[in-house]
Length: 54
Image (tube, rainbow, N blue to C red; front, side, top):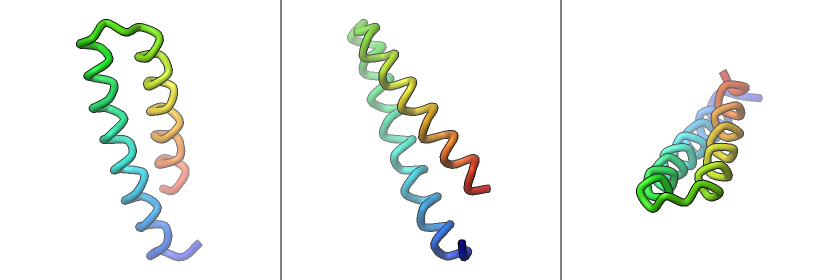
């Protein structure tokens, strides 16, 4: 994969990860454990995708 496409994908994944972290913070404040678990799993998957680009 070429560098511009990889960088574009990394930018998108970084934004998604950031948004997911904000959602997770909100779920923690609301005390919604199940939602927290789902959001953590989603954040982990996004983070793994980011690592695979490097």
